[in-house]
Image 1 (tube, rainbow, N blue to C red):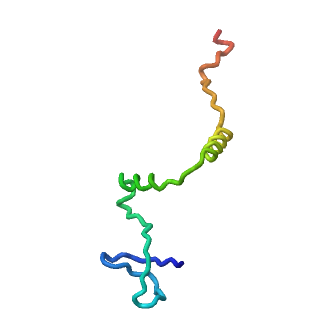
Image 2 (image 1 turned 90 degrees about the horizontal axis):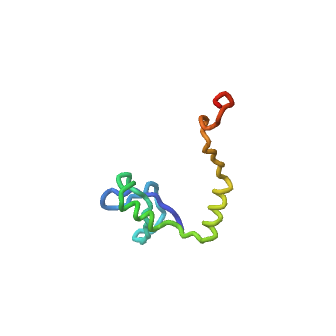
Image 3 (image 1 turned 180 degrees about the vertical axis):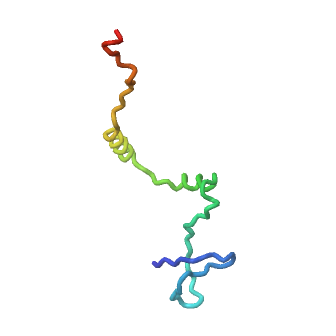
Length: 88
């Protein structure tokens, strides 16, 4: 299987480089590009959501474990919450 980069001129796909194929050869083209105007569009977001990889419960548990392991402990005590000896 080979990959051929091509541009669409509005009617046909034109390869960027010469392609060594017999005349009349039928090829299958899989489009993977995205027009910049489509990025962020609801239809593009829905398509991306439909193609998200499936993850197992074990993968989710491992990710949650790693997040918890790397999380910093938060100190909610503010600098003004500490009572100084002179304030008593």
